[in-house]
Amino acid sequence: MSAPRFTKTRSRRTSGQRLVVLIPYLWLCVFFLAPFAIVFRLSLSQTAIAQPPYLPVFDPAAGWEGIQAFFAALSLDNYRTLFSDTLYVSSYLKSLQVGLISTLILLVAAFPVAYGMARVARRLQPLLLMAVILPFWTAFLIRIYAWINILQRDGLLNDVLLAFGLIGEPATWLASDAAVYIGIVYSYLPFMVLPLYAVLEKMDESLLEAAADLGCPRWKAFWLVTVPLARPGIAAGSLLCFIPIVGEFVIPDLLGSSQTIMIGQTLWTEFFGNKDWPVASALAMLLLCVLLVPIVIYQHLQAGALERGR
View (cartoon, one colour):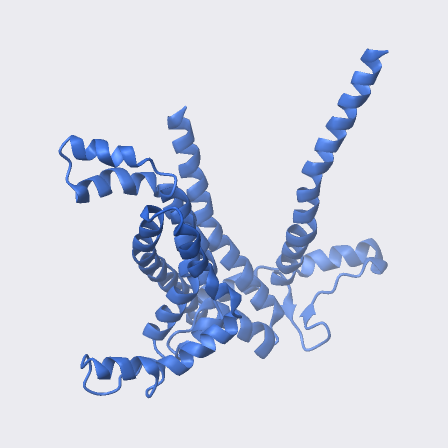
């Protein structure tokens, strides 16, 4: 009697495990693969002054001939337009430039913060962690509007710089690349600090003590011990920042100028301003492909590190 009961219990556990694994796959199919398929299908369509504003329209009631005509009307013209128009190319290049520079600035700014948080007394770490997370309690749009007031010609930043004698007259910060970088670094700093802190907080301090006992200077021990151990946090924080920054829309739109046209603004203009859904979908698809490159590289490096560890 015990063997059948054991078999039934084991089968129930197996089915329960399969169900648990199936739920994330269903979630991905419904909220990622289905929208992805719709956007990809729109990117192969043509713009039309109609409702919906694209052709061809899939109509299963038209029968087999209608389905054949639908697939025959799809084309790659929108993708050819993206590579032939300098507006789209410059938008992509500007987005990649802003993403790379901002990520480097964030890394340089966040590493000392995370390192200091990981080295203070244990009782103070929760307070510092709360201070890093605290800006998330305010709406993102409100924080960006606050920076508009700070960066104005008669704003707080110029008042402080004038008070300390660092500038002779009010500088123009708003509607510039500098304003975009300031807004991005302020908004995404926690996304870089938290992964770095999670790694540095677990680092064994005896490794630094051993390096010091062997005559290694502190700055050299930092580069040879701390930085290599922090690589997982550096990679995770860089991806968490770089990927959303490349597609950023709100910050460059509110703080930038006409020279700071990123791909998020171009996509919004095509979709809502020009009502060109096919070109906007092609922009989104190409952006997704561009952002998949650092993820694939990261996974390749992780797999290589795991293989070397084995």
